[in-house]
Length: 385
Ligand code: SOE
Image (cartoon, rainbow, N blue to C red; front, side, top):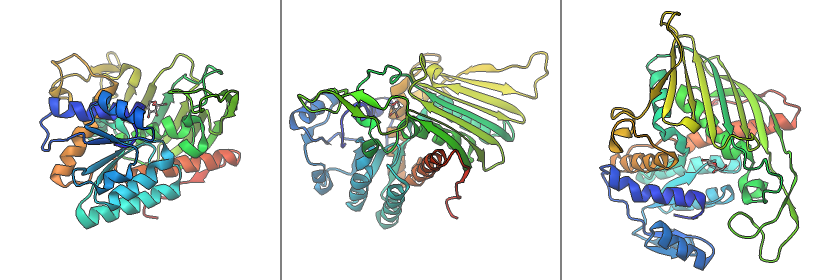
């Protein structure tokens, strides 16, 4: 694994836990974690369960006992590490968004396709929320025709950790590190979820992005990016919020909002899909529930009903607790590992693939271009156009 902060910790718990709850066809070993600061990465290795640590991620590529590289770094290093790892014949799991630009994402897709053709090497991007059981159930219900033809997607990803204007500047607020702000960090998730659940893609968008607070205090340590002794403020170079709407490939409309200023909303990923035969609604803050409306039921008793997605025959849930006991944020990361290991053992292309990551990147790029040009409509070409 490369990187060991928030995502590194989440991925590490997944690698540790997956073989303890699921029968995996392979036996993952947590060999080595890489990071720049020798002491910090050594402490992280012990805390997170890695056998060794290193300050040079290139050494991972030379080791025969490393077959997969898990990229948990900020977006500005995804392309370099992932392409090098694929070139060295290592499978890759790469955090989202796939890259900081469409050009980088295209190079990553080329590398992934070449690696797959040459030696069956797999590349997956970490749109982890696909693996929340209620989200998988939503996709299955759409595919089974339970809500009919899709008319609307309404998607929001709402957080509030920047509503406090004194919150420090972190790498997530720097364009050269993160690529974009709320748009790429959390908007990317809802763009991917909309595509995953509906099986449709966005054919064009009109967008507005904005930055509310342009200077933030520098801070040292875990939260900040400053060196010892640095004081003062630094510039925020990304968007704080993005709103956009678009057309779906099936003809429906879609609206999206991504913000870290939604006071009181902590990790509210809300997606509601209206079809001509019914509707589905999900909110990550109540993540064990999927709401379902069946428009064929008689009006007297029809209404959204709450499906508790905690039964043994729901996706993934049977491997965990007795019926009704529910799952949390970290479980989707474990499911990601389970699926990736299963795909490696079966020699099967994984989802979301780097091509899926590129599709999201194209939407993010169109959103930025639209917003920069007075919310002008921007077409998003189909992958093969
Ligand atoms: C920060 O906004 C963040 O950690 C995202 O980067 C993650 O992808 C999301 O899961 C939670 O919020």
